[in-house]
Length: 478
Image (cartoon, rainbow, N blue to C red; front, side, top):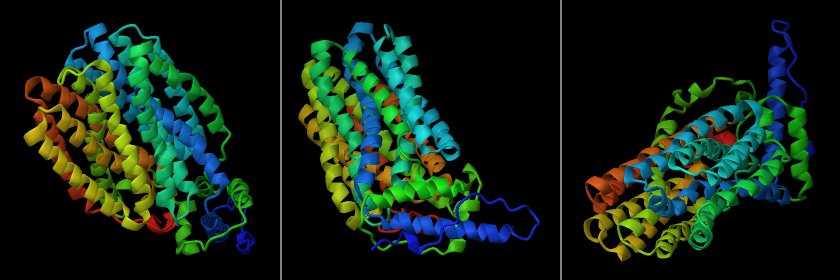
C-alpha cells in the first residue's frame, strides 16, 4: 500500500517577512514538510533506483581506490629507473595524502553549499585528469606534483560519495547495503594489485595511470546525471526538488516498510533552520563523537595505508622477491580485505558498528605484535600475519565510512565526514614517511611494533563509539 500521500507536503521556500507574525508558522510548516519527506524516504526499501545510484557512485569509488594505490605498484620500477631513495618514497606517497587532506576539507565544505552531486563530479574530474598527468611524467619532481594535485580529487570524492549514499538509505539494513557499496573501494584496490602485478612487468609503469584517466572522465559525466540527495535538498528548504526525487524513489518499487523516524516535527525543524557551520562538530552535543571518530580514522588508516603502500617495496627490497612475485604477494592484502568486508557486510547490522571495530582492532594488534616479536625477518610470516592484519584493519576503514555520516545531521554531514577523513590523510601522510625512516634507521620489526601500538589506541577509542544500527539518521543526529 502506498504511504506517500498520507503525509502533507509543503513546497516552496519560506517567504515570510520578519516581524509579520507568520515566521513561526512558516517554520513549523517547513518542519512538517521535512518530516513528511523524511518518512517517505525511510519507507522506500532498497530498489533498482538505489542500485543505479550505487553503481554509478561505486564506479567512481572503484577508480578512487585504483588511483590511490596505483603508485605502490609502479614504485618498484621507478626506484631503479629514477634512483629514488627510501625517504623520497615516503615523500612521494605522503604528497598524495596531503593533497587528499586538502580535497577532503574543501569538497566537504563545497558539498554542503552546492550539493553532493556537483562536488563529487568535480572531484572525479580532477582525479582523472591528473592520472593522465602522472602517465606523462618523466621525473620524480613532476610525478610528486601530479600526485599531490590528484590527491585533491581522490580526497574529495570519497567523503562526498559516502555522504550521498548514506543519505539515500533508510534505517533498515543500512549497514549491509552501505558496506556492499563500500566493497567497491577495496575491489578497486584489489584490481590495482592484480593488474599491477600483470601489466607493469609486461607493458610498463605508465599503463597504471592511463587506466585511471579515461574511465574516470566518463564516470564524472554519469555522476552529473544523478539526482541530488533528497535529504540535502530538504535541509536547504528546496522541497519541490526533494519531492521530485522522492517520487522517483517511490515509483521504483511498490513495496513499503514502516518508517523508523521517531522524531517529531519540532525536532526535525533543526534540519531546515539550523545553519551553525563546521564549528558545530565541536559543540557539546557532538564533541565526544567527533574526537572518537577522528582517533578511529587516524588509527585505522595510519596502519592500512602504510601497509598498502609499502608492502610491494618491502617484499622487493627487504625480502628480495622477484618483481612479479613481490607485486602478487602485496596484492593478497586487498583480497583479504574484500573477503573480510564481505563477512562484515552481512554481520554489521547484527553485530553492530562498535563491536566489529573493537574486535578488529584488537585482533589486528595481536597479529602485528606477534609479527614484530617473532616473524618480521621471515617473508612467510609477513605474508600471512601482515595480510590478515591488513584485512582486519581494512574492514574498519569501510565501517568508518558507514559510521561517520550516521553520527552527524544532514546540515553538516559532508563537512563532518570531510573533516574526519582529513585525519586519515594526515595519518596516511605521516605513516609512510615514518615507515621509511624506521626501515632505514632501525628495523622492519620496529615498523610492525609501531602498527600494533596504533591498533591498541584505536581499539580503546572504539569502545566509546555510539551504536547506530537500525536507527534512522534523524534519530541518531538531530
